[in-house]
Each structure stands twice: as structure tokens, then as C-alpha cells.
Image (cartoon, rainbow, N blue to C red):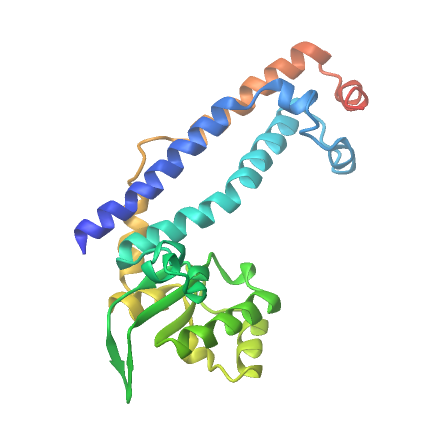
Length: 246
């Protein structure tokens, strides 16, 4: 387990490095010349200093750029931790058994559940409750039926949160899938697949020690850098700056 955790943490470490590279690459031209800042938002929010403008731009730029990529990072982290592989890398997918290609994680490990014997488990992974809507659940249901028909136990997995939104549970139920059986959220993920919900705490602590880069210090220094350049270019006149953006 410890070896798998260390391998999984390498995905987090690479993500932190990518954040650092992204922050370092942000320039004043991104803000002014490349349509990086919405002047209407700045005006409507009555932002009155170049530091606030730079802060709004930098933090939104980083969050928007990395929100999706961190979802993929967590998927890779969980796959490594559980000893699974991507569905599209599975031998059945390569052999033309298309049903398995869709799944984010496939764990080939035979097990019994009640009277049933399963060949393994297949997981569709989403970041958290806000990332799951009715369409996503209905897509899961469609693929879950195929997995069951082929002897694999399907799960819809949310890596964080305490409970899925009501729409996820009600949509599963409307198709005859009990959320208690097919949906795992937050600590429940680690209880189901690793037998210990408290591994969530271990993982949070381990992630806090990864990377060795003070990202928030980098963010603040980038904000200061851009604010200084804006001050120099526009002489402290925020209105002049906003008018220059179009």
C-alpha cells in the first residue's frame, strides 16, 4: 500500500510543478493584449487598484486553467492507488470489446458479492458532487448495464464530498440502481476499495507534503509583478486602463 501511495503521489507532484510553470508564464501581455481580463467585470465590481486587478486576473487564470487538469490528476492518482488501469488501455479494449474502453479505472480482481461472482470492478471517476448532473448519471447507467452484462461491478466515484447531490441519487434510482450500491463519495471511496475510510486523512496529509513549492508565494509575487507594471504603464489610472482594453 505504501509503495502504491508513493507512486500515486508522483502525479500530484507533477501537477504542482505544472502550476508553478503556469504561474511563471503569465505576462502583462496576457492581461492587456490577449483578452485575458474582462473590463466589464472589473468596472461592475468597482475594482479600484491595480493590485486588485492583477489578483483577480492571476487567480482566475490559474483556477480556470487547472480546474480540469486537476480532475485528470486525481483520476490518475486514484488509478495508481487502487492498482487499476484505464479502460482504453485494457486488453479487452484493444481486442475490440468497446464496452470497457469508456471506464476511467478497471480493476481486474475477481471477487464475490453475495451470490454473485464478479471478474473485477470498473469505475467512472468525477471530482466531486458539483461535477455530476443528470446527463452524466444517465451515461453511467448506460455503461453500467454493459459492464454488468460482461461480469464487472460498476461504480460511480466522487473523489471528495460527503454526499452526492440529490439529482445523482434520484437519477440512479429512476433507472433501478440503488445509490447505496453504485455510488461512492469521499471517504466512502477508500472504505469500498481499500477497506479504510481514514485513508482519506492519510492522503490529505501526504499531499500537503508534496512538491516543495510554495504556490501561494509564487501567486503573490506574480500579482505584485503585474500590479507594478500596470502602475508604471497607466500611472495609477484604472479607468484609463479599462478603456484601453478595447
